[in-house]
Length: 297
Image 1 (cartoon, rainbow, N blue to C red):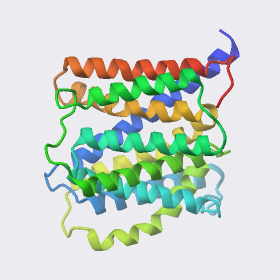
Image 2 (cartoon, rainbow, N blue to C red; image 1 turned 45 degrees about the vertical axis):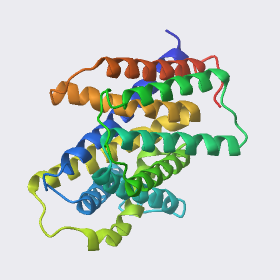
Image 3 (tube, one colour; image 1 turned 90 degrees about the vertical axis):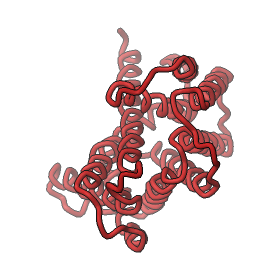
Image 4 (cartoon, rainbow, N blue to C red; image 1 turned 30 degrees about the vertical axis):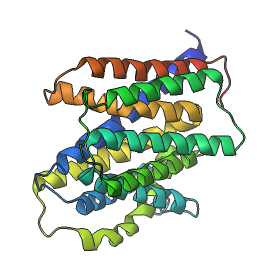
């Protein structure tokens, strides 16, 4: 096995871990805001961001005993703002949107944002990347159809639609900026710390009573699936093309549903299998177009 092949496998493993973290965020968010009253969307977002910021700051400070190194720099505030907008709109949108239509809007918005920035920068995706993208999008549409793995709402909520578009655009910008991160863990820590003060804007929307269960879910989202997950995401972004970064995220609804099947005893449907197969086929084509003897777009 060549060093290039080994490096590609390591990158793909990191990419898979990041995507699993994204799916974990969706599952944790849905579990916390499923109408049980465990926690409200604003409190969930505040705990998620602040716990992630404190955890990453502690890790960075413990690493070299430099307690100010992880404090935000000038370039951190744009990423921090994008992170805050994503987290807040993501949580609130899932109150009014079903998981399926929410996932479609979010990842379609991420896809269009990243591709628009790429084209604006003068980089066009290859025909193989474009083909992989189209197949993956087709699979996603099949996957979230009413007979697929996720159920859509019968009534369309325009407020949730707009909020999830905002979340997708914000996450696309956050991901694009992450491609230039030289030190992923440090950059992620600075981004979270920059986003933390913005949580004050959400205080008027918090509920007076939240449960321990809701707090635990928010902490898990902030520390594990967001804090650690985004460090891995920032580490893998410079090593893959924009097209692969965008297309791979279309797998998150499928990964989340696989988690539901494994841990929540949800049923497997034929449409789920077909849609998931197309999604992973599209991702496979995009990965193939980025094999070691090819250049990045």
